[in-house]
Image 1: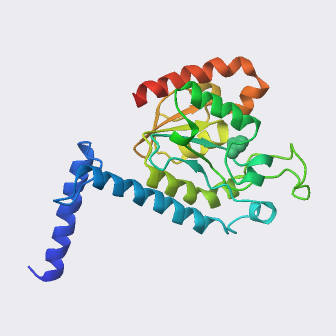
Image 2: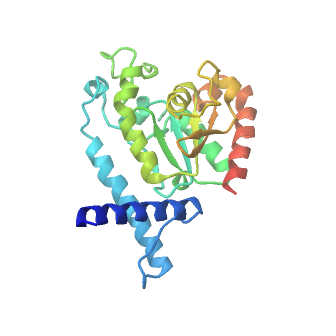
Image 3: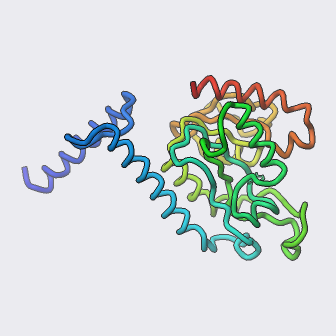
Length: 246
Ligand code: URA
């Protein structure tokens, strides 16, 4: 066998071995002589560094028109080791100014939901399907309530960023908040049980498969602010999430 062929075979065997380890629940492989604790510490540091480097590369993004009016890119916030990841629609007025997701009124409600799950915001990861503030009237960056849902072109341009974040964080479960993030992620999930015509009211609380990661849609906190009677449904959904995480 020539050298190139031999190398190819080694790579293929290693890949198969690593996949088998992964499938049997092994989270990382350490070098002989390295303690489990220090290997784990290194893994956490690597993930943190990867996310930080990635976030800096996104801060000057010009891939869509939202970059013309944004104040700050809202990359995402939270624990790189999070088991639970929340994904919303897009930054609003407050998020655009602070550069952080879910910090306005809807965000305060999301924080309450997270705390009711016996978790802290710092323990989960929060992101959006687009990283810049979509404005109804782009000439009025200075007013509140000038928000809209991101359009398909904006979502498509921004999606690689979110996919990469998910790939780095590797959450155990993703909770999509509201219709745009649910439809976007389930639309590319390949999960055959997802019917793209079903409304968020119909599919909330159901467990889907997003490229190997569990995904549960629920109502958006901004919707709950408009219709507090629906809070009980979100709580039902979050109890299921807590069971999965336990
Ligand atoms: N709504 C969202 O969907 N995301 C935010 O970050 C804030 C409000």
